[in-house]
Image (cartoon, rainbow, N blue to C red; front, side, top):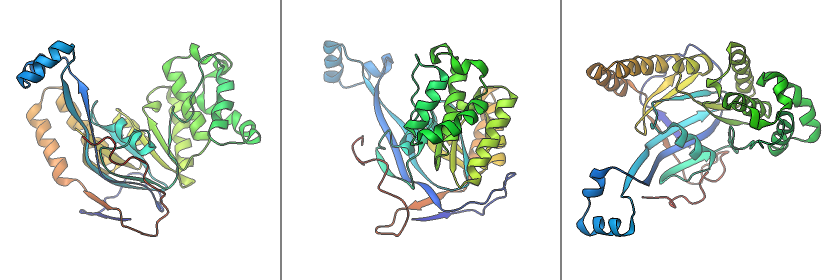
Length: 315
């Protein structure tokens, strides 16, 4: 595995020692076709195609480019925030790293099996939170003895009080997300992928979750955190990746990257299109471009690619 950055490393507001590479993405693309109800798409195709669609009652399909040439290298001890607007490819990138979806093109490697929050610990709605804690920890490879040791930690971190003994179906989405985070974090995976789970909860929960993520980093874990809230990334991450239309706009210290994304997003929300376009262009010019190359027969700790069917979804 070889990686290089085209610009000099900048200092982050949060410094942590980093170790060996744990996750690598090299030239990852994700494209898929979805049906569209857009009338322009319906009438804009070839005549025979339009006639066939009308006869079969089928909607026209459009090509969605979720990721376009994403390359990055993550190391142990890093907490990496992934920010961007809806549809920028954040959740798609996490699912590809987790091995849940094969990319259309490119290579994804991981040093160990990543845990995608809410997927690896699938919870059962008719069982209580307490029962789900035990089942979730067992499903993540913990022994019955370890489960009983970790149980109080999970309950404290989730912070949902007596609701822990009620059925999961009575929980709000925020309570469910907090419990999933507590289970996954207590299991201390080497690679933890979190998708918006920390956006809910009070200040006390945020403090507890931030402390837990610090513990995970000290234990040489790698954490990816997808969030729409730039402040969450500033507070909890050492590095941030700004995705826009499936491409990496910035990859650098969390504070600096989140601040630039926040200022750009504010201008977009307030209709300052020219200013936003200028800020986006400046961010692209200043970005650190990572080049990740997978070397044949290189003596690295990575296992086989996360996607067994490398070209199965190629469009």
